[in-house]
Image 1 (cartoon, helix red, strand yellow):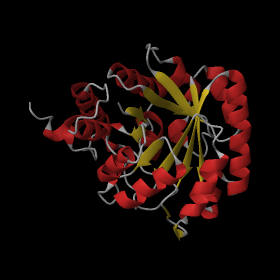
Image 2 (spheres, rainbow, N blue to C red):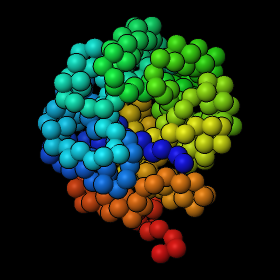
Image 3 (spheres, helix red, strand yellow):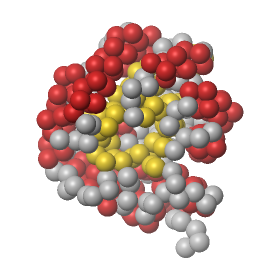
Image 4 (spheres, one colour):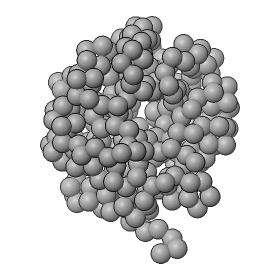
Length: 287
């Protein structure tokens, strides 16, 4: 069985021009949990000045109707963010370390070494507090500023982040192809893969990650998202499209596809435009 981590309420919404109210974001989290998503990334505890779409994280968490069997996660890039996340009462802390200096400076306002040090501090505190932790290595396959990323750098970073419960490799700008994903997941032993469908390879890459041993896949309902610090990096892999693919391939996810389709349609109405996902428009099959 593959575990789907739903990143729409955080990674998806942070790249939208429209800023949704915390109440609406909490409702999105609740609908996704009700659809059977085992992990939902609910909020980001970062500066509201830098990422206004994530303002009011505590209010979002306060509006969550907790469900048994769902892990509610949040992003923190430093101990200050972790303090907020811990006080809000989430179950898991997720943080990202970039594989290149240029992206790290733009995304976290820190060098790679500084970001790793901050991650290690958060990891240690999460272990003491009994919280799950996930470390994502962003731009693991390619950087918008530095181009190709040496796989040896990613392997070394994954080794340094072994203190996390899970290490996730992120194709942040959607440049990877299946052979690269398969090889790097095997070499790092990463538990998870975070794909973007920027160049229409995201779903093939997700299957390659599973074939290589990954047990966790990140995705965003409707294909919402991208990256505000990566030019032309379009949406994440759409959760409903990914679930359709996996289930048709005989891979169990435990997620209600019809419910996901309804959520994507609801979001289309909120944003007033078609979303990147395909299945919510075409419908599942057989009907």
